[in-house]
Image (cartoon, rainbow, N blue to C red; front, side, top):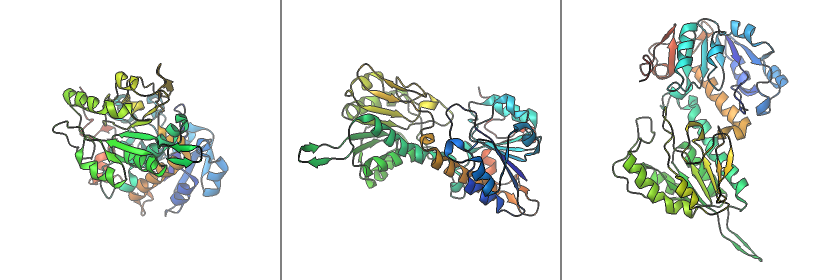
Length: 380
């Protein structure tokens, strides 16, 4: 088995799909696979080419010959459609694919007869928990959102009593209490902020309170969550009720962090321009859904903008990438756990078991065909 880790081509992406530690773990499998690392792949995460060599990998400077040999290709993001034809026939691509919005790539994999796993589609089960890149990266995104916001705020987060007077704690509002939201709450509380949180799922109120935060209650009528644990999409009427209920909380907040994403669909607009206008000058909004359209009116993906009223809106793509070393470590560990789970010690290869529940959830393309039931036919 030959594993090839690619250098990421997306602008601003610093993460890597492997670390020296996971290379060592790959090399500890028996029979030992060959691990190839594209030159410079780890530089953004603080790993040099020599770090990977010491761990047991070979650094390659030409992508095409390595792809010709690779049986497994690891990367963070989906390859561009034009790149897929360079993959070896019957090889396995493992990466984020954004399959609901990236039909061209799925069809390109099928044409090239390259098997493709979408990491977003790994089931949220106990067995697959150690392979769940969405959760591991969301944890870091929630943490980084608080750190980035506090750096822009111009105000400390904890209460401080000094001879010069008492400084009141900063007020933080977290919208969406999933993995990222919970970590944002915990981080803001550890830094001494006064934290309030809102979610459409009443079931998370206990989790919010257990972290020492206040749960903002807004009566939206019937809501709930999907089988995967995501919040269900709200009706337009419910969104309007939510926005009215949140307006006062936003006006009193120094930092607002929004985390609401709908898998495979554009993010819901939660914070309106009118709500932003009602916030005080110097306040900071971090929109963790910027890469899927944003929860905030005025978010510009990839940029930090400032309104006429002095409110800064952070639209950083891949907030977890601001902690690239740890984000790479967690992502790479998830990938190793995935490959190890399907590693066949007798043949020394990845076993594409047709009856495996994890693969049923995340294997999108196999043997030249789009096999996943959600993507067999073009989305209408």
